[in-house]
Amino acid sequence: MTKLQNFSKGIIQENPVLVLVLGTCPTLATSTNVMSALGMGAAATVVLLCSNIVISALRKVIPDKVRIPCFIVLIAGFVTMVQMLVKAFAPVLDNALGIYLPLIVVNCIILGRAEMFAQKNNIIDSAIDGLGMGAGFTLTLVLMGSIREIFGSGTWFGMAIPVLSDNNISILTMAPGGFFVFGLLIALVNKISPDKAKKKIGCAGCPSAEICKAKSEKEVVAVD
Image (cartoon, rainbow, N blue to C red):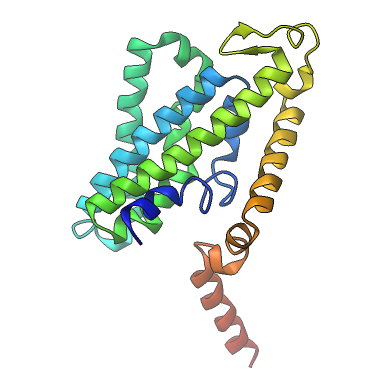
């Protein structure tokens, strides 16, 4: 895989939200408008980049038995730094993101890339992977935020849009509207790249495939 392929795979082929279906909770919660969506995407991208780099650099030092707790501690440290910076320099964004900013610590996208990629690859490739996944996450959030804000509130980046501002579909800014837009975008990605999207669904694309396989083999042996 080239550096460009490594970066671009996170945009459509392995989009963390629309293909791998990770980070759904912050995606739905922070995509009610473009500003909060962009802020969440940028914050998650910074944490992804930093955590991937450090975890890759320490992959030969961290014992395998405690790698998950170590990953979480490292991710939590970067999230804390990002949260403090946002509180200091962008208090409006901090209020908009609320609890979802510190909850980046348990975002499945970040821990998933640490487990599946950063601990197995060098620093440069891990950094590129983090940027690519962050870009895919941010683009998805901004797209969802744009659709929901434009048609749900009649604004974009807070600026009123003629006609739509007086004829908005307010349900799009609520939870049902979020799920509706989310489902439409997943369907669109499946339509654009059916082979790439479908091959990620099922046992072959699941991080726990080996565990399930081992468990199944034990059950078969027990029955025999």
